[in-house]
Image (tube, rainbow over all chains, first blue to last red; front, side):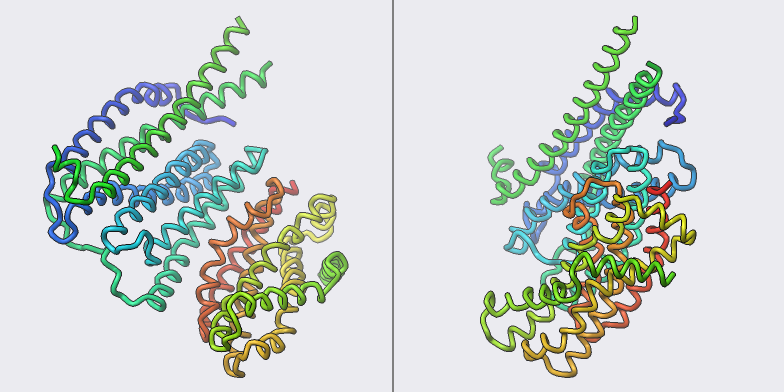
Length: 235
Length: 51
Length: 207
């Protein structure tokens, strides 16, 4: 398996690591300062809406990660360049963790807002199913011992899952309007005040930097694995 | 300072949500970092044996 | 084509000792209901619509390893693929076999079951249509998942984790009477998807 990465690119990935770690920490420090101290409490939900500053970025990146997962699987089918298989695999774990975070923080946010920990709301249910799509992808990858085969199979599963997301979304929405009176849909708050935009933006940036940091570490793991494998083959 | 800790009465929710977020991402970072270090060790060992 | 179908059907019916096992399974899954929830007939009617889908999902899901795994492990799959060069023939034969062995018994005993659970005649036809079109799509889904997971370690739970999120749309529309056109559409979509993905999976493993 040839990674088709030049030495220069590998160098950039290695050199970027300390810079990324420092900037992630700085961004989170600013983000926490703005989201916990500097921003005013919401006039309906009070201080509990501060959970939004971690919940919303996690949910965004959970969805974005699946798009990248499916996109790089498609690119892998077209180009057969193993780098896309690695991108898909690395992003799957990160995406699953962020789906979990958005579910848990959403549930914690739900308790003071709705009075219960969980509501069978269309959005929450879709997120729960997304979590299981990630889980299926990761488990399938782990259960096939021939890794060359595993990358082919799990790429197909990622694309099938991506095709299914709109179908699942549509049917869950339809199911929700059938079974739920529309009183609980407080989650959708379209107008966000400018004072909330600043912390949300900084926290999103910080989460993004964190994602890139972990992603680069995953890439380096794969590069080293590849090197170790090749040395053993030569022996 | 007290105001920060009490969070307008929502302290348990806010602190547990933020705590969960940061603990999870730190675990994600550390596990991957340790895996990277392990790979580097293996590679060093192989290189030393060859010399 | 027909020789292959005959062989598949013969093997499936022979190995699982036929119809009576599958239909007893469906009857027993539903007989649990009054013991769990009491004999209130209105409540039973409501629960019947849901539990019958759990029975159908389980019967399709738990037996999915029989679609390709047996032939793959004893090497027959290579022989079949050499003799029938179009993979589509093989896949369609597997669809028909799996549906006949693990879904058809449900439709035969459905009149008796709906009699037991006080289902009216109009509702019976709607439930029948929903189950019919839904079961087709669910068979297409398990077929491609089992083609993809041929080389995975044999764990039915892994397959269940992959399959159940894909079943959810069928279950949502299946329990709503009268939405059989949507189920038909979903089944047709999964047919197209299943054809491509199963052929892709088989080609990978047999090479």
